[in-house]
Length: 304
View 1: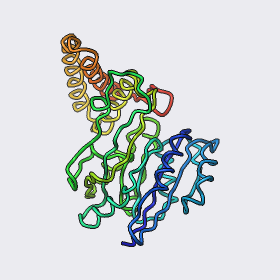
View 2 (view 1 turned 120 degrees about the vertical axis):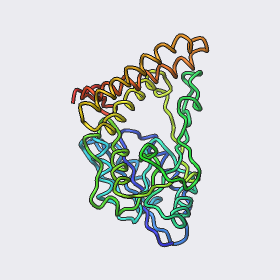
View 3 (view 1 turned 45 degrees about the vertical axis):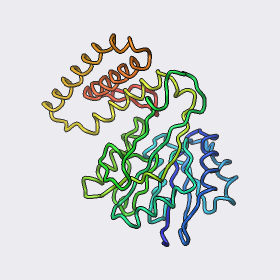
């Protein structure tokens, strides 16, 4: 096929996760003639991932390492784009591992389906069971679609994505989302609006490892709240009437979920938690409509 692929990884103080990911990349199968490079951007100004990447310099050639000292996931991803030379950009996170046929399945699909990129499933796996009643199927359910289905903005993320390099020629991840998250949905949404076509590749799978601190209701509540903040920020038009309508809708939904909570509690902790998380999401919508944000990758709540 002769296609060149740049695997782009942004990492921040996850030595075990990064090592596990690089182990999986060593096992990748590649179609004949396909050349692959690996770009690792360390978002820690102390360059804490340097030794891990250096130890793989012979087994994962070519692998490129650089540091983006400013703590901002969008800037780290943008630095990876600067370093990348492939026709295709392939994104994966530092808490994931790739299936050995990851690249094979992606390239097989995009060769026969006209598209500008493809996205694949991220399958959750618990590192340790901390809260037994929080099951993976209910609280960490992965995105799923028929193979080759055209996608909209809600399905797009950098945790498992193959995108044509030329789409980034005049576009970059927005650093204003660099601490809150959502920089991937924002950029890929812009690409969609400019006419790009993205499809689903169901066989290009990665596994996400969920650490013990994320197998707790507190983390799920913060993630739901952050999701509401980011979703509203991406969607709102800025018009006063639009904001008021969105705020009213969020209040109505919060009230409705709160009314359902006593009945959900009759079914146990799991259904009650699902209702509580929906309330957190609506609270996030309201927080964003007030011009505030939640910086999951920063210091938490922000008024900016």
